[in-house]
Image: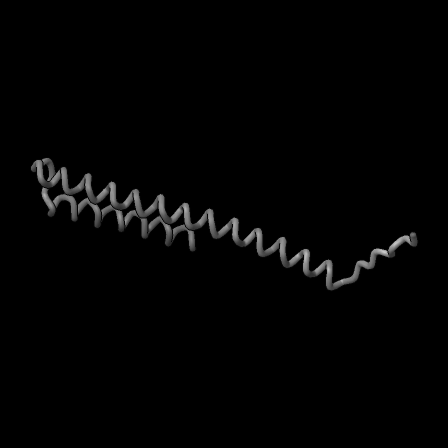
Length: 84
């Protein structure tokens, strides 16, 4: 039996590198998808909470809108400060 010579060339290395990159990208995609689901479920939960607060007359739509606008302005200002 004659020993076989293992040939390693640049194409094989590039192929392995491409496969590793593809697997890493798939893992990142899975993490992003899970993150998106959590955000979506959180938004649904907040909407339900707002509806309950309004239905029980704990807060009015106007008060809720005012609070949301104030928080949005604070957030915008923080982002602008970070960007500068």
